[in-house]
Image (tube, rainbow, N blue to C red):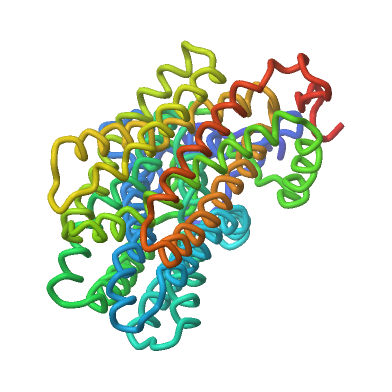
Length: 474
């Protein structure tokens, strides 16, 4: 009689629905062992990572790309509505800028909570709910006639929905589904924000010009709802749900467990990082980065160009062009970060950005001319070129806690963007021109460059950088 603890013939076929015998206690069972021991009953969706068939991870990445492109494009729409809302309701640039400010702020603050919700309830329900919230926010504005409805719709609801599908979403997808090509997929999904502006801004600007601003709100609501069934049908939570390994994972890959207490760890890391001067220098410089990109140019470039007689469609097309050069600049900046001192690199980026903002007021005209195109190309190259060296400095200073620290630094980016989005609108209302906003932003870039150059190597400043040398459990 065969002992109960013996392992059966690996070629044996097991009836459908029966569990495989357990391994001896000396070796923990693994999902991959079960798959290897029963080749005759592999699930229909099982595909080896190196097999000839398309790995399902690429389908998940494609769905994520569609979602992120839409979220980025919808988030930029209020900049197109500033002048139409001013003419119809008499609402000031400052009021619309405040709606954008709320939008941008929630876009940054919602990400950590969205990541926790995805771990708890899954990607599909969280993303589907976020798209529905965006559609509701855009839909509310169709019938609005009070300022609070604008703040609720384009500010709170659209900001909350789009923030739930930003960094947290792309990071979760790449971490679960990819081992090989993870960096490539992360870069492509990060560039989706630029692609969203490129795809949607010119189209929405044309709709506003031809059919009124409500047509843009209707388009955003319909497109957001149209993506929900795509997410529900094609998005999957984890490769193991289909009997797969992550793309490029070895055969002995073990799916990592979701760490407990992520929120508490984030607070602990913030408390410790805040004791170092490096954290505040990085956060301050990155807040100015957000102020001079999303907050000022991303929100107010189109109405500022309109003040000089440029058509809204032409201004939107110029802003969309930023997205193309944004991708090129980010990739090239990553290459430079591997070879040059990140502190000096950041300093150069901020100095060049500040110089370009100082000359922008004299470049505006009724028509697009070569000098403005050169500005757009240059500003696009510099738009998020600050991200790779900032991430590198977080890694250098804070070691294993760098991803969490960068999340808090990114919150500073969004706070800076939110403040300037509202403040620039107030400047326009009070002075009738954005010129002071451009000059002030140029001066802020000089401050950001100084913050970058004031950073020292870890250990060269007072205070101990966060470089854990023992496991967190210890």
